[in-house]
Amino acid sequence: EAGVAQSPRYKIIEKRQSVAFWCNPISGHATLYWYQQILGQGPKLLIQFQNNGVVDDSQLPKDRFSAERLKGVDSTLKIQPAKLEDSAVYLCASRPGPRPFQAGELFFGEGSRLTVL
Amino acid sequence: AQSVSQHNHHVILSEAASLELGCNYSYGGTVNLFWYVQYPGQHLQLLLKYFSGDPLVKGIKGFEAEFIKSKFSFNLRKPSVQWSDTAEYFCAGDSGGGADGLTFGKGTHLIIQP
Image (cartoon, rainbow over all chains, first blue to last red; front, side, top):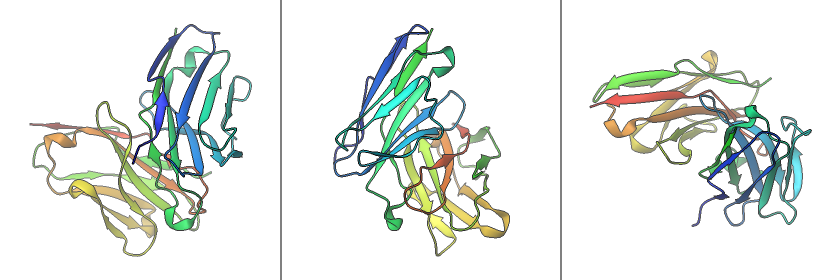
């Protein structure tokens, strides 16, 4: 079974530029998450999708971050304009759905490392 | 707010030593708890999980964790570590609703010296 795919793996930009990250979850997984992991910290949830709808985006800095999952499969996370403090690894994760017995086990991609200069 | 805290940010052990990494959570009601591991250059992988039932859960690679409700703890243990256990370990939890994203602790960087 193919895992969660993310691209690009690495990106270096200057502040005020824009960047986009792409994620393709495991086939059939209805729930998709974007996490931000700053060096030395644990992953922090940015946004959660259930199919193509947003379930939770309370921690997404909406003045500069946006995300979409238009067809309920792959997803894009965009940052515009980027700030120095956005330097982090952006992790995409998925899981089959909200059924309790499958709750919680997230499958992670390898992440996209962003450096903002 | 729901939170997960890990006590030790950096741990250095020698091979064959016993390991215990602390994790405390602040959820009320139903809680699901997890330990994830991130080996150097790799993605986060599930070590073990607790949903309900037996509070002592066993995971991959000889790891286990004990859910102690009275102490709001879910400590990770391994009786004898190996050099290959060098990694970042994250405790995480959710409220059991099924659609919630996980809340992670800050992680523990474990270094095993040969």
